[in-house]
Structure formats: C-alpha cells, structure tokens
Image (cartoon, rainbow, N blue to C red; front, top):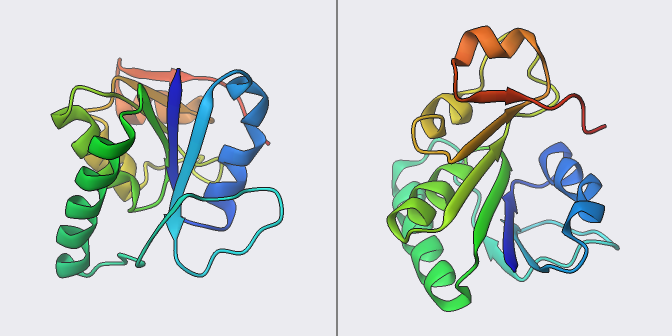
Length: 146
C-alpha cells in the first residue's frame, strides 16, 4: 500500500511524523512546503506556501494533480493546514481515499481547513471530543496523537 502524507511544516508535519509506526510496511512519501528542514522526515515534494493567496491555491491544485497521478497512492492523509485542501480534493477526484486528521491544537472550534475538507473526506478524525458536536456524524474521535 502506498500512502501520501501531506501537511504544512511545523506542528502539522510533526503530528504526521508521530504516526510513522502506523505506516510500517507502507510505501510512504511526504509533501510539504519549501523551507522545511528536518533530519528524520524526507519529503519527496515541496510546494510554495499557499497562505491565503488564490493564485497559489490554484497552482497547488495543479501540482497535486501532477504528483498524485504520477505516484498513484492508495490513500492521502493530512493534518492540515491549507495544503490539505488541494491534496484531499484532488485525491477525491482521482478516486484515492482521503483522510483528514484535525490538529491537536483544535480543541473547541473547527479549523478552516477542516470545515472545507469535511464534506469530501472518507475518514475525518478529531483529537478532541468537543469537536464531535461541532462537525457531525462523519467525525471520529481518536484521542490525542501527541
């Protein structure tokens, strides 16, 4: 099985890295933003930081489409931030399973990214029970990754 792990750098990427044991036996590749430097995670692809720039979001959709067609992962998993939006939407378009894990920092209110990808995620996981009532029946509580 091949897994694509997508997130911005910092805490979002750290949360994905903490899940590495769950991916033993998988072929895994990471996608993150330019500027990441880490000793244990070796991203295969780097994108420009999207931020709130609509042009960069369009470019990120195009890059994700190219990457996911080339790599053919079975699943795309993201902990956010906005880089998850093009990754998970393109995954759904291509028939790839899309999983979103809401950040551990989100305790009381949904993230903007979470609200955008909730409708299309095949599996939507939260790390705070309080978020279950904010999202709805598709959300699943998994406890804290950290």
